[in-house]
Image (tube, rainbow, N blue to C red; front, top):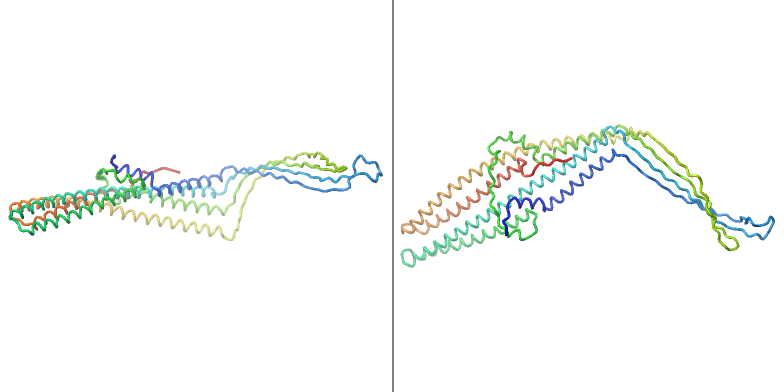
Length: 443
């Protein structure tokens, strides 16, 4: 089975994670609302067609064939109907509304950019989660390897102690101590293996993957190279990273959205000017009758009136000078929302500065911790070599050798922990610098 690289894990998360699917749909809806706002500048065409049928009932109408004065002349009792029709086509075009429509379009555009930035913010968080989970899985595997090495050393120590006890050069307590240490090493190895399985499950969850075969693929060690921003001043990095951070761009677009909303609210003080035209056709079809003569039914054909055609053009100015102060309060609300958006943007700027400084300090501390862990491991291995030699020569004891082996195992675990802490710290610094997701252009 091919190995699972960090890049493939990140790509899988960006493609399959359900949270991103929801945010993509929200972004598409925001773009559609932008099109709805722009529709106000386009011509508006409406049609209206109506049909109306009138009924009348008449009696005692003599047949034309009857002689004058004939008393037994049959009569007909017809139902007379008339059908009236009209059809109208209306065209209107907005000319100017003092910024009302353009403000609403700007609001929709800013809303679409906010939706895109929110999606990118979530993308960055998901990518960081995948990176952390990936390195946690690598760290768990490395700690499991350390536990296996310790188990092998304890098994060798047990065989050595039992051989010394067998030939009588060491007391029985050495063999009992070695058996206890070996059992503890077995327990540690089982615990480490379980941590590997848990880390794999958490990696699949971070990726949004549902196929269980992903957990069987081996991982590839992918150390994060040093970043050029390490060691630079916070203020110098802050100005460069703010435009790259999607969360900062989202709040910046909310400020623009609030400004556009204020423009649209103020435009309600002014009228709307639009032109229009209409064309209509109307007429009547009448005289449809069903007559009864001597018990027989006879239809009479209708007669059509001359249709009428009308054209109309208009220039319309719509203005509501007083609406119960609703416009005044709408403007005040928009002004308050703008002040709140600007305050939120400044608060985020201060938060970014603090988080960026912490990320830089964490990377620096992780580098020092890694160097210290490597030094501790080197000294612990020297101590173990010396203790093993003393025990082999018969001048050391089992406790001294056990302490040295325990010190090596702990030093190796600390070395693994420090190594992957540095990788995660550098990934966190990339998140603060806005480098985990590319900057996307849009409306």
